Amino acid sequence: RGGAKIKELEDSSGSRIKVTRGTYESEVKIFGSTDVQNKAKMLIDNLITNSGQNYVRGGTEKEVSQKVDEYVSRD
Image (cartoon, rainbow, N blue to C red; front, top):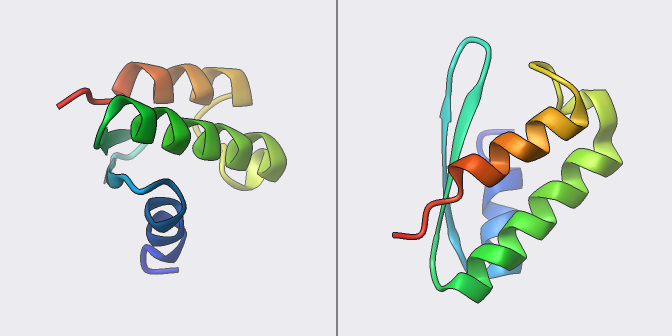
């Protein structure tokens, strides 16, 4: 725990990932080039899909994936 999974995703994708946790939702921002952001998003989507309800507390897998799409930052 303690951000180990985020660090692993950052190392695997080459991106920087910032997660702001809320009570019912979390905001995910991905920083880096477009290619790096897309790779990080794919890894996050795979994590959500393969982990099922362990990572999905605030909605269905599809809803969480859509939220990841909404919060991908192009900064």
